[in-house]
Length: 608
Image (cartoon, rainbow, N blue to C red; front, side, top):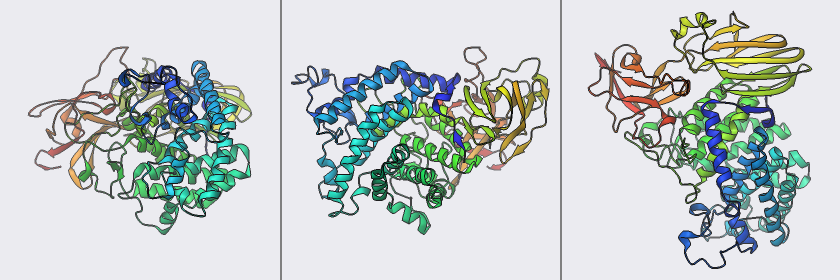
């Protein structure tokens, strides 16, 4: 079992990932605390200043969209905000966000007291009772899960004890609710998008060891999806994707807390159904209009409503749980593809706002959310997604440190009785070591040239494992302290097994190339992928691409060769030899431009 380094031990230091984290952090600070709390205040009977009467709703200082006081999911966003702010407090020691978080938590405690001491919802308690009736209600358990998650993370990452006290009293309400409701409706715990609740009850038991959480776990652990997965076959097609994925988080956390192999197997079976047997789009999505696409039928669903962002975020979390559980490199490869073509591609690089779906039809445009008038579910997972980066990079076990993602960062841990510091940067090849890389890179500077520095407080024996990406087109080059070395590769990782002391500098380069990835049910339609990065053609239609031999014969690199742009502005191309040539750029760089991802490829002399 691998363990991710604590968020407080890892800091992302540069590049596009740091830039996007900073944009996210600025937005979290920008939002007004009173507006974040507005629906909790209303439920507790607190009148916000100046809002006893609202003569001009358009000028009212309120959040709208899904946070509107008229929406049945109102208040869901604050839980995401708390989780994101707590994560920044841990990884960046962000005192400004921590102060804001602590104040908001104290106001939630005030609301809980006014509600009678247990309920701390942004919605009425009776919404939960409606789950067993015939009157329509929109996912109150989904809304409450976000509040519970945010409070738990405020304790786990930001050390806020009051948050744990609040959620512990709320758990008492849940125990009573289940005792009161389950007799009339034994399935009430499984209604209203309850998928994330199981994970939170398991998390709270791991923190408190209070037996009431075992009661809550028992109430939520027999989800129908578990039975369906154990029976085998395709259980996901045409089902709501984001309602199902958090259930896998629950099974994984149950395995981590209790060691029950049944739940490890259920998590693996979920992945098999969701990814392995289903296939996926080049961007990792496998859903359209919020529902799972049937296996190997992706081309039929290319539209403006592909890849709901919440599903990308939650599938990355599942992949991370499975990577820690199994150590299988395929999960780390999946995470890399998803964070480039989901986390980054669905975040507006200027505003930090999400696009609910990632349109993949030809000539599409991304539709961005607004800062205060939408607050979709994807708005919530988007503010959390950049805060995941520090937890996805480094992992340890009893005798190894694993670098699973190549993100400029620095970290500290203890292994083999020594304090170990490790950092990675994207390396501009110097004249001193360039000779070792020319064979694979042609002298071109590459974003996949990575420099590690490992420093030990004393002598320690351990393994350093560096992931060899599945897209790597050649055996990686390796230099240790300025000397070329022969890489040892085991199970998808380059392994350096040695006694470490002082500072060691490691340089490696992974050779990437553009490949054409076809859709299984329309193999003439291909996405062009550079390493893990999906390319978007800046064109309003599928103009087709003709080529002979290698697809690279139809492309010419276009690099912004400036210090300000290097190296994160690479992976840009222009077509050559076409009736009308056009540019291709990383999908995550596209903001308001029209773009096309899937092209009809034709080899000269015959179909591709």
